[in-house]
Image (tube, rainbow, N blue to C red):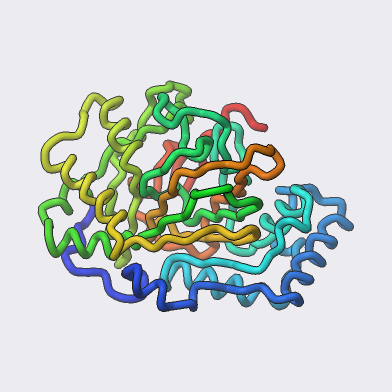
Length: 341
């Protein structure tokens, strides 16, 4: 078992809803000059004949914005754990150009990784008509409410190409604050959370088995190298433990449900509406994110569409070995690719 942190986490990463609402230091507005710089970098990529996903930071020069992106990386790793880039007019660009701008920001932050078995590096978060209650269906392909969770990468970015007609708000909570609440009220939960669980890989594991779960128990709270990191998804924990033949019960079940409940408390949870062009970036080790269910527009061209990017930071924290292998693809590995798109 990993070491258990028995002291509260201090510093800006352990925030409450009121504290985050009162602080605009994690919000990064783009001005006309910065947007022009992004567009010029996209033009440089086109002039070189480079395709989407084929270029890196050196090919996408950001002489001014690179300082902002470095500050965002610092905010993600040592600050609030969240960042919001606001001011991009997403409606001005075709999808390929928008993805190029987004990818360019991402490769300045770190290394993107695959998000599904098709090997997608930028995935559409939109309703495909799937039923989230069906086996192995991932929530981002539905319009359902999604419970608090972390994604299996250092960071997750969501660029709002189009918001929903109604609903779909983002709900974020500090995993560090949740740890502190558990430490104060139910310290007995820390041991099963540190022992970890077999997470359901929802048919996207390395063996091809639809019932594959993580080979190792992945801790919910992992204390390593002086830093506390979180990995949580109530649905994949419960489903994974059933598939592993060890359904949750007793203290372990109480502990998992406590994390989910705390992440939804109004005093802890911060709600935000996505505006078109917003880019939300979260540190998955310090933030849990959730989504309200949404109602979409009838017209396909107006339906809610977020572009998701999973990025491992250039200067990411050290992780305990069994915590770092979350998808049976090695430390900080992406989803195993079986059918590249």
